Length: 346
Ligand code: TXA
Ligand code: MG
Image (cartoon, rainbow, N blue to C red; front, side, top):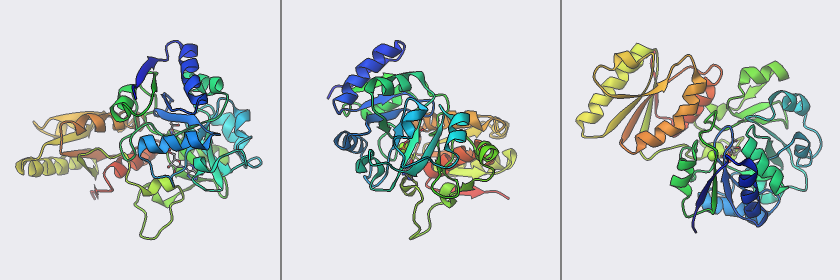
């Protein structure tokens, strides 16, 4: 299959080209404000199955349905989720996915047999134009091969999906670069996956919000994932990622020692550093992630940098940061990409 790439510069033309494929049961990759999505008609189980095939995704991992307007979300849930109106008024369109009991309209293929469904309204003009022109909610996971870092540019989608899908809509780099916050509303509001809508921001609307235990730690043996996606190896480049969390000077010293050790053993090593620690790496070459003062920018650069460094390294040594605000989303993705190979310095 030949994969075409067209710009979303002409929003309507791109949406029409994409919608034609979606309505025929095919797959279209499209930009959102978080990462690129791999979309199919979310009401057509057969079309949704093609997503799992193209990504090589385990079919017990459910998908998010994307809507173009708030009212459309309520047709997908069985009744009105608690807090939904307030959350939607505050954060939609935007990087917040809401989970609640599903309506009979939602096919089993979307929810992987679960009784709940995840819905979000993306804050991206081209994405909403595509959904509106298709006339159906669009089921879409991130448009990467299963297990790889999520795509934050059209070229990343092409790297993973060339020959597997007919069309990629190129809307340039994604604003946030990490996937949406996933919030379950079936019981006590619980964050299953952190994102740009932070725990602090949600607490301002909800009062209290819980965090799923697996956000910063691997699932224990026999433990059940609140969100099936959390149990798989994720966001991982081919290189081994190792994380060191500590004050800038101490982290740089430890990473430098690891660097020398791996390089001495003949490995190709790269360092992903923060601006605060950059002066402490001596003559070792580093790739700059951004400043610790701005974890939102660290998030937006993480997946792209992992893909970049993966081409030239066997081992990637990366600094961790604090988990306040969007630091939590950064650490959630980084620790998974490292398979939880992390050292916390005193
Ligand atoms: O920002 C995003 O959310 C991007 C863009 C394309 O919208 N999409 C995305 O989809 O990240 P995906 O499939 O890569 O991640 C969806 C996550 C998975 O961890 C999945 O297990 C979880 O949401 N999820 C989906 N439906 C669920 C449900 N009913 N219950 C629990 N977790 C669910
Ligand atoms: Mg994904």
